[in-house]
Length: 421
Length: 82
Ligand SMILES: Cc1ncc(COP(=O)(O)O)c(C=O)c1O
Picture 1 (tube, helix red, strand yellow):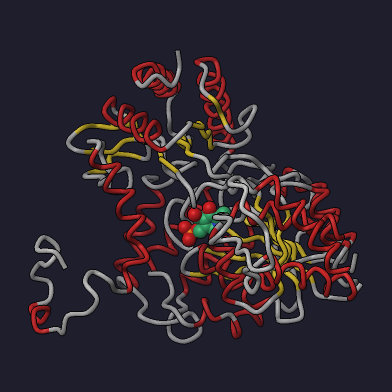
Picture 2 (cartoon, helix red, strand yellow):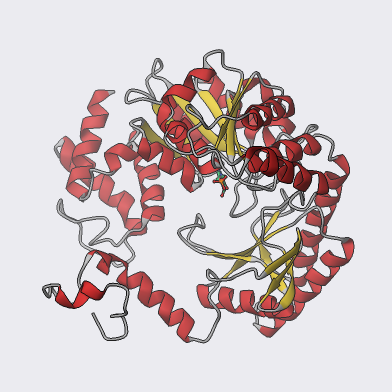
């Protein structure tokens, strides 16, 4: 260890026998550490080390003492400061305490968890709903449990990390198809044994590029080959389809989808995950799903805020319309300025701006932040095709005026960094 | 040509568009080390091999395949299983 790294974290350090100098289990990260340091040495701020000092509303925070417009949250429906949601959370905190200190299957299911599942059943019109502690765990749980060693999981190559990790946690045979390609899915299903158990995993909205899946065609192909279908609607809940259930509702395939996975950490505005289904044997999953059993349940205040928010989302037609209007306007505005966008038109509330390399992306990100606008920076491996992008996600609480200001800020920052002419 | 030589030749042909550095291909050429492929290239390449031979190479199998020779053997085995 060098002098600088040899801090006071472990006073016993000095007594350890010297090993190969500098080599230990962390050595595999050396390239990443060096790459990151090289970037920071150019004088830019760390895009992955930002702190929100205060949060004023779903669309405003104080970052480094400056009021900043938030355009990089998953707070699509702006529910985080809804007065009814906050009141429900405070009441639950008073009535049930700060946490459950236990698993859903032991002492961790309170009245509030049940009510939250009831709200989900009503929202989705399904017979069953199971609440997990995060959406990540909902995917881990479903993928690893439902498909066994002899079964096949067929997933889109651009699937979210939680879907991949769920596959790796289980024993199923994993087959990938090219992103959003109906033909590729059909070909692969056609090569599988006709009588094998099959689960096709799709997402409504893909979160990096903001593109949506051709669910109507994909679900039809999956059903033709006798597969069960799960759709992850993490980024679709709240504003696709008549009831805001997601892209699968808008695609008219509700009766064909076997499971919907979702999260409370986006449109619902808190934290938690779920799976809903009409399968008659669904409830058995509560006994066999390890990421459900071997972790503590959500705090009472969280399930109370979630249930209240979900019920309000059932009647959020106006907010939804406003969010669509803003998304289309921002997409058009950026396109007209000459930015390269990931989709030809706005397909969701996520607008991804493609940039040529890491350096340009960070410079652009920083220029926007300094102007008072926060967006997400995304890079491989989070991005699918080895691309760098700035991801903008709109919130139903952004005003028309906000969208105008955002477009202006992009114009100025884009010209200053040479991204646009 | 034996079946294996034919499979090798076809696999080599499919590798070419992704062989940016013109690495010479033998049974012991590794995908990660010699060809320096990342997971995205692997995904594209595997899909093209699957479509060429009309087989499926699951991610579980891919985890065991490190060299060109191992891939050729796996392809031959999968072809005869059909
Ligand atoms: C598609 C998808 N699924 C699942 C998740 C996980 O959700 P959570 O934040 O509740 O763990 C996310 C969130 O990043 C996601 O984008």
